[in-house]
Length: 554
Ligand code: F6P
Image (cartoon, rainbow, N blue to C red):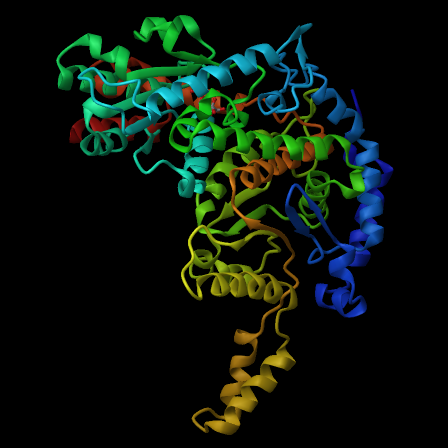
């Protein structure tokens, strides 16, 4: 059994270094070095990473890079790019990078080149999206398609949903898209009230084509369509499928010619670059979808070739490990000051927490260190009026990523300056804080102009109005959110996750933890709907009591 990384010499050195560094506040690090910004910022693929507002010095980086050496990060990057089956518990390669491989370098899995199939599916996506957009493909009653409903959940929903929203400025004015994921009838029910069966295309997106929520929603949508259009034959013109499971698609009643395949070496949360992105290829146009791929590919090449010390995903990944394991932080905030990225935090929740929410090493040994942070976040200014109080005056160290567009998708006078000033002000004040002395001086100065407050009241208020500061953040800044920038940004986070998984010696690409709940739901279902409650005997009193209460109430 491999020794846990926490037993390594470099880990001990990092622990000692943190003890030392913790005695220096962030504002002091800036006071000591006016060139921190130049020293700790780097640009790749049109994205500037300013990591100067972190608890780090050149010595910190040296040690973190030694940690990367210790875990053989460079070799692991090579192993992923080589198509090795590094998702070892599912015996699968991890090649989402092949989906956006615009330079068409060869990738092989089990000795077979994958690019011919990848390019064939991209060609089929282009052909189909153009047929929809130029009205060659029409519905059962001969009308053009103007609405796309993607039915999927998890990676078959969050990625395309986030991309569609982020790039709405690039969307055809003649097309709109909906994303139905939840099995609560509200989600599909509400959507079906808003769409016209004659002009709607349903995309059933499911890697396995077995996910309960997706298959129930797909069956209900199918029944709705047949009922509205009066003929089973209508399904052929209003349903396509995206999956790896061809036989199950046929059994559902979708013609295999209307299936867009992808492969088991694409993880669900890494699949928006595959045909899972079909809805965005249609609404944005294939050219824009391929620009998204190009941006990701450019970042992939940066990740593969840049020295670790100048490598954006490596730096972000190591800084994340630095906080999780040496400052014992348990939360990471994502704060886009670009409203088009409003769904990015929820997308990253799956990408990060389903990848890194693991407790055993690759060999199955229990870890004795923290792994995955809880991902939180919201569009910046909204967050300021929701949870920034905790960030500014709470009791936890909470690292944050500020994601900032210099230009918005829309130009209204004064709005972008307001957005930018808030972004910079918040990352600054989180770092700088306001000491008790500074606060007292401010309050006393206010006192001189209004005697409503007494000295005693000022004294009583100082601690409530002091800002400890010392909260670290990265700022990722780009000119404007184009498909290419978005692709690079998302690839950056994918590779950051991989870097952290290597540091923690965990498999980022399986998700066994989602199984048990699904299995138990299938056991409870008949007890909830039928008379037979024998299955309940094995359950706890709470579950039994709740089932009985529900059954009495329906
Ligand atoms: O959440 C579990 C999971 O398997 C995710 O990894 C996946 O993205 C989602 O369910 C949907 O799976 P499928 O695409 O197979 O329907």
